[in-house]
Image (cartoon, rainbow, N blue to C red; front, side, top):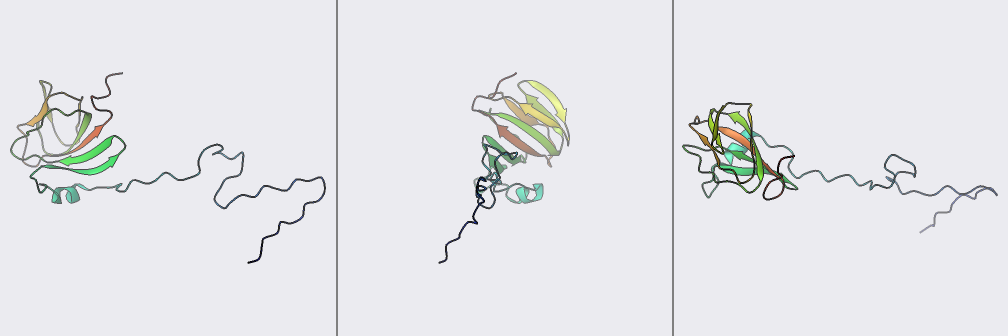
Length: 151
């Protein structure tokens, strides 16, 4: 195997440092930071149609996880008949995709419809009431157990 030889450098001049392909030269915008690209999540897209095909789950649940990343977990929830939820140990956000009804959030009741965003702090009793049979919501759980608390 032939060895690679460096070109000779005239007297009084320093040889340019050699860099491996893909690495930035000193002074570039990423100086001092890793050049490795961040790993893309295993699943970066989920559709309502695909998720609804997975419901109910084999154990009869009306929600299933679409995506997780760090502390975040995204689920699709499509209750039928009633909403048997119990308080959760993390903060959560609902995005209503289909259906309408009333949302009880810690005793405060508000009507909801498609496009609405609903927030529930960790540990608070909440449920969907009097909802239509086509209710479908994305649920995003995030943050530490016990919730993040107000700013």
